[in-house]
Image 1 (tube, helix red, strand yellow):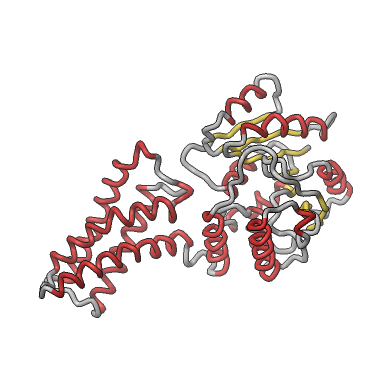
Image 2 (image 1 turned 45 degrees about the vertical axis):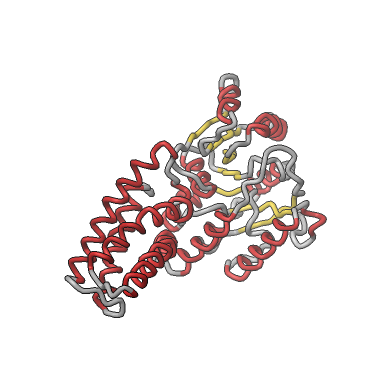
Length: 355
């Protein structure tokens, strides 16, 4: 009847309680638990596998080279058996009791597409049990999303919702699957849905640690960029350019210093561009391609591959500029665009292998 998607990252302390809670809620009901684990290092998968040996309704997907809540949810839906999909964070902060009633409501009214579990009175801090910083961030995000989505709902950023699987099956090509707000992605992408809200309590996390970090803000920005440009300006590309500006600053600074000594040579530009490559690699690994971050044991081989790719970009630059460097010329701008586009496409598809 219902497939429950539980994305996990180092949630070993909460696995047993999740399984027992859903067993209690859905006693005598067909359901499955789908854990999508982003390569946890705290034994999360071992605990899930222990339960799998005695319970046939538990599935485990392990993602070794990919992170991000939205893509984890999508991967979980792709193996879901039932027509109803419930998505909920594995930290047990949401009161799960209203889920059974919501399933019954969806059964009684086939027109309902999504039921959102609204964190009780999101504008009331005492009712949501949020930390000061998370309360502030949640309200800012809610204000932005309420201004941009076409649905009159109170908590579009909730991590607990119930939906029909066919919504994703029929509209998956419209989703950008970036970051942590899968529901928001759906609400921005699909029109004409019938959405209901059910209130639920939101409690303090008792076990494990929060995954809230700066990456969430970057994801939020990228998703909106993708949506409002119709994917014409990919978020990955914008972040790659911003990281590239750090390397470009290094190149320009190097050239300014050289110019002070009356050098204005193509070889100097090429040399400074090569020096900037490791800098760009570092920032792209932690910012642009953060959801495909290269593991430490592969960092040097990947840096070498990136260096080779960007060296070809430097050759592009040199072939366009010939023997002189004029930072104000259209040739210099053209050389940056061509070499930058080459570097981005090759880095995205070969070095970080973004899917």
